[in-house]
Amino acid sequence: MSPSSSSSAASAPSSAVPEGLPTWLKPRLGRASELAEVQRIIKQRQIHTICEEGRCPNRGECYANRTATFLLMGPVCTRSCGFCQVDKGHAPMPIDPKEPRKVAESVALLGLRYVVLTSVARDDLPDGGVNVFAQTIAAIRSQSPGTEIEVLTPDFWGGQPDPQAKQRSRVEAVAALRPACYNHNLETVERLQGPVRRGAKYHRSLDVLRWVKELDPTIPTKSGLMLGHGETEAEILQALEDLRSVNCDRLTLGQYLRPSLDHLPVQKYWTPAEFDRLGALARELGFTQVRSGPLVRSSYHAGEAD
Image (cartoon, rainbow, N blue to C red; front, top):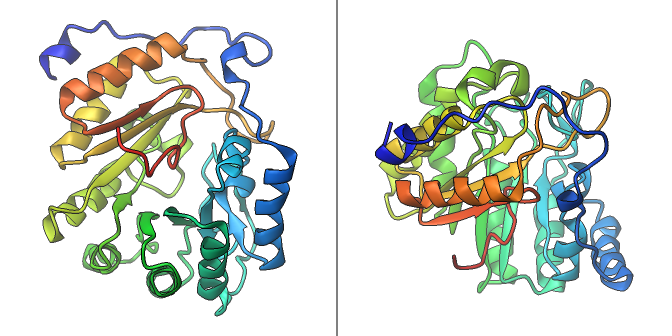
C-alpha cells in the first residue's frame, strides 16, 4: 500500500441502506427536443447505445450535449453480471453487417468530435467481436476523420478452454487500431468479483490493460469501479494501486444503482465527499485523469481534458 493508502482507515459499508435515493443521486435532465433528436437518429438506424440499454443516469445530460456511447453487436450479452441492466439470458442477436456504417452515419449526423464504442461480451463469436470494432472504427474515420474514438471493450476471453494467447491477440488487435483511449473496467474490488462480475476475473482484466501498454505505451488506458457493493475504502485503494501497477492512466469511480429487484442490492451509498476524497487519493497515486462522483459512469465527459 502507498503512504496515502496505509494512512487511510478502512471505510466499511453501512449496515443499513436508507430508503429511496439520496438527493445527490438525482440525474440532470436535458431538454426534451435534444433528447428526442438523438433518440430519433439512433432508432432510425436500429442501433444501440449503452446510454439506453444500461439506463445510464446521465443520458439526459449527455444527449443534451449531443453525445452518446454506442453499444456494438446488439443489446444481449453472453455474460450474466449481477449489476448490469444490459439484457442477458437468451441467444444474442446476429451480427448486423451494416452496423459499422449506421454508427458512422450517426456520429456524422450528431457532429461528434469524441465518440466511445463499447459492446456486450460476445463469447459466442470466434473473435469475440474484434472485427466489428475494427470495421466500425474504420467507418467512423472514413466519414468523420476529425473524430477521436475511445473503445470500452470486454475482456475478449471467449470462454473455456480458450488459451490466454488468443485473448491477448484479440486485445492487441483492437489496440493496434490506435484508439484515443483503451478502456476496460474492473467494475469492483477483487473480493467481490465473483458475485458482481460473473464470468470475469480480476487479474484477467488487469492483463487486458497491461497488454495494451506493452503493445503501445502511448495509448492512454482507463478503468473504472462502481461503488456500493460492500467494498471498503482499503479495498478500493488496493484496486487503484493494482491498476497503477499495469500503468493504467485514467480512472472513473461512480455509485452503483440497482436497476431492478433481480439485480444485486445496494450495500452503501457513498457520499459526494467520499468520492472527492477517493478522487484525490487516485490523483496522488498518479492517475492523469480522474472522474469520481456518484453519477460518474465509464464514458462520463470522456473527451474532456482533466
